[in-house]
Structure formats: C-alpha cells, structure tokens
Length: 316
Image (cartoon, rainbow, N blue to C red; front, side):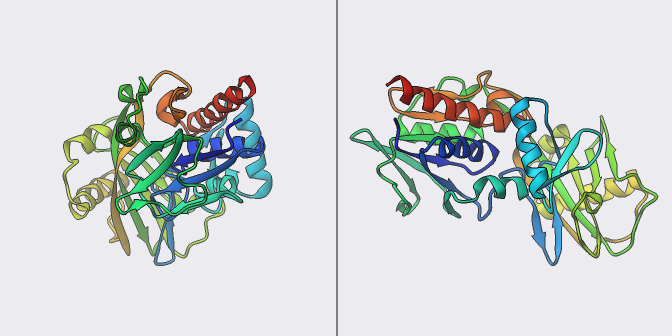
C-alpha cells in the first residue's frame, strides 16, 4: 500500500482526502500556500473584526457529509444558520481546522513544481524543494487546488489528467463592511438574481460571532465581476459600496471597508468525475470542480480520491 502521500492544497477537498487516508493508516503531508486552512471556506480577521468573505454557508445532503457535519456540530465547529444551512463556528474556517488537527502541515509555501524521480515525488516552490516531512519520497501526490492551478502543477510534473481543463469557474468580487451602528431593519440575507450584486449577508448575525461592530459580506455577481475583473481593490470597494447602499438604504459610512477578488469562486462547469487519477504516475486531483459548486462536493471528491488510492493498495 502507498506509505506516504503529499497533498497540495488544504481546502476542504485536500483535508477530506487527508482525513480519510490517515484514518486508514496512511501518512500524509499537506502543503498550503496560505497561512491558514480552508481555501474558500475562509475567515478574514482584521482589527478585531471577522468576515466569512468566501463560502457563506454549506448544506449536507449525503450520508457521509451529514455524519461529518454532525461531528462538527457536537464539537462546536459548526452550527445551523438558516433553513438547512450551516456555518463554521466561530468562523467559516473552523471545520477545516478540525479536519486538519494532527496532520503534518506546511503553510505559507506555494508549490510551483512537482518532480518525480525513481518513482518518488518531490514538491518544490520558487526557491526549490520545500522542507517538509517526507518531501522527495512521496509515493503519490494529490493536487487539491482549483483546476487552473492544478493544471499548471500537473504540466510541471509531466502528468496528464483528462478532465482538469474542462472545469470552469466564475470569479467574484467580495466586499467586507463594518458599521458601528446596527441596521436591524435591513434583512440579514438578501439574494439577488440580477445586477451588480448577487448576495448580501449580515455576517455578524451568524451563530458564534462575537464582535462590537455590525459586519456585512457582499458578493458581486459573476457577470459584473467578469466585466470589472481588472479593477483595483479600492475601485471595486467604492463601486460595490455604492450599490450596497442603494439596495439596503444604509448610507452610514463604514468604519471598515475592503474588497477581495476571488478568481476561482464558483464552479460553473465540473469535470464530471468524483476525482481524477493517473495510476502510472501515482498522481491525482480532487476538489469541488470535479463534481459541482458545493462544499459537500469538495468533501466527497476528497473522500473519493482517498478511496481510489486505498483500493489501489488493496488490489496491489
């Protein structure tokens, strides 16, 4: 059986794969370019404020993910928000941190090249091989990052995984606002089907949030983001703040306002397979882009990737 596996990307897909593999006795090491875990299930913390500026919530439909959500709820890492939706608590990163407990993690290092020598894998960044447990001796690699980034890494490895290039994403400008005063007269969740903005949420209303200010997260629509993809963050902030005021009637000046551009925000076209695997080169890829635009899809893809590798070991 494969003894030590490297995983690039510590979002929900990579963490799900790592958790499943470790539960079966396989050693894993994860590489993550950010300082924290979770990918688009992220929480921005600044000046005593916090914003879930990526994924806003998640739902659970399949038995495996329902079981996982129940575990998060029992530990306090997740809580119900509205209808059948859940959020991480006290922030959206909490479920990812729970999955990452006890794993070998290398953060704040961006993998740029994958090298296979004598049947073993090495992960490199711009400075060369990354110092990490087992690097250079991985029996297999899992690439668990957005499809365009995965494709670049796979090309560096000389590996072909048909389906990666089929995935398509919608980008999203996200606006984060904080106000000293409360605006309870405005609905805490507003979903729009046309115009510059597609989603408005009072982030401070989510369970487990503790902040002195009222915080909001606003997502621009895919069409507007594509049209204005080259704006600077300051320009996007000003444009979206004006539209937020027009929709909500909130004309007070925020004490904090910032915009973040997600290039790979929402899967529009999936690869059409739970995961992708090249048995000859012992490299695979997983993520929500394999299945569809849901947190649960990333979780399921990671599980499928782990099962693929484990079944290979059993059949060896």
